[in-house]
Amino acid sequence: MVEKAKSIWLDGKFIPWDEARIHILTHSLHYGLGVFEGIRAYHCTDGRTAVFRLPEHIRRLFDSAHVMQMDIPFSPAAVEEACCEILRVNQQKEAYLRPLAFVGEGVMGLHPQNNPVQLAIISWVWGAYLGDEGIKKGIRGKISSFARHHVNVMMTKAKTTGNYVNSIMAKREATQLGFDEAIMLDTDGYVAEASGENIFVVRDGLLKTPPLTAVLPGITRDSILELAQDLGIPVKEDIFSRDELYLADEAFLTGTAAEVTPLREVDGRAIGAGTPGPITSKLQAAYFAVVKGENASYQKWLTYV
Image (tube, rainbow, N blue to C red):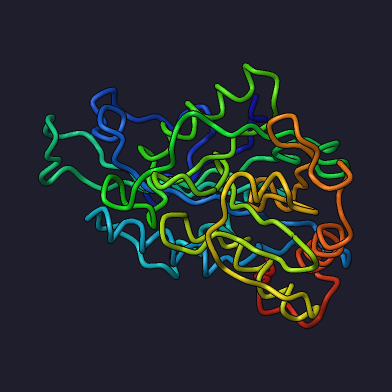
């Protein structure tokens, strides 16, 4: 259950949480055409609040809208400022931010025509997406029977609301079978990503992640790649099969919500020793130091509120 905050930003105005409503004929509600972002603001060690990689998230929001032919009626700079302001209004030192652009009411049918594009920004307090224990000890994954989107079936570079029906089906299947997360293959049978996260494996000291051919260009993924290179960890972006995942020494998931979550098991097979490995732990610690403002080399990624 999402804990209510004071206000929600909707179309340029702060509205009390329970009064932020839309019409039942909102086009996106019927047909799934909308784009969104997940962003985290952290309470830093020095007492300040910083939004992690805010410009990159807002750029991806506008990129997604462009791909889906949606014209967001605000500038990127205005949306960035609204993301900071909602934290101030809601008096939140740490929160998850959800900008959501959607097609409003007007005509019905598959062509939204001149229906207005609306924008909301919601902030709420959200802990570890896959659980505190998952962050510390790792989670259990299941290869899904649902394939990840093909690049010519859905626009895989856009963070589009309708794309996530695929993720919901995979996640439900995995959790109903007693696992924590679904691991999805692409339509060629190679490991793509989890239901809402990118995936990394480690074998013989080499860090590997699927290339950006049919996966969402994750901002946490990009952060981990840069951190790994700076830490001297060899990195390769390349396809790999499910049995290569089974044989990995280490594996972990990345995402704004999931942060850096180790995989300790997939399909009943332990990954490495079945506990978070040394490279996973090193990158996880480095990531949390960065988002908490403890590493001066990465201040470029923090927008202080």
